[in-house]
Length: 231
Image 1 (tube, rainbow, N blue to C red):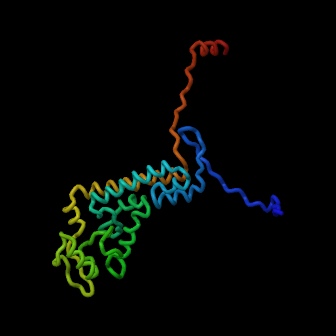
Image 2: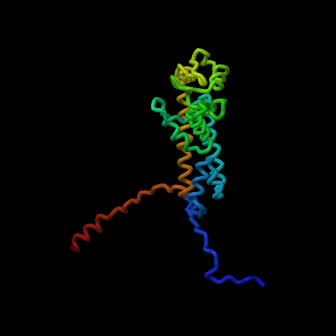
């Protein structure tokens, strides 16, 4: 025989937050909006997949990630990096970070470069902040730059055992090499991060409704005159 559960022992019902679609007026179950917003920040569109809004999620994911990847391609993979140094503060990364985990390697690389190893976590240099004049780096990373970067030579480093000290400005090299494509790549990746902010808001609050301005009904002059006569 099934066990009876008294009303006081029944589990509380889950809070259900519903938004109204501006298209057809149907109800949209936002489930847990805060969790959906977190998912939307981690991966664009993922929060909408969680809410069952798969078409929107697919559109957001494909458009925003494509925009971000195109920006990286235009900037030769160098336009997304995190740097909070006094002479090289990358404020654009605040907007780029809106795209979530895709930009997370930039934080890892920045922390690793300022740590005791003086080299990026991934020695390939992916999303590594540019070297500044006088910056210390590991010998292994310096040798890798000399080997694979056509703009950096052995004489660009001073020997400071157990490290090497950079004697040039790498951001100037990037601008010289890429020209306007460095700015274009930055713009594309910044727009991708900022667009995802709107996606996060949509996952949290539901679709926005267009503002409809209420128009006052015209007043019949005869009615106004009658009101004045009555008064």
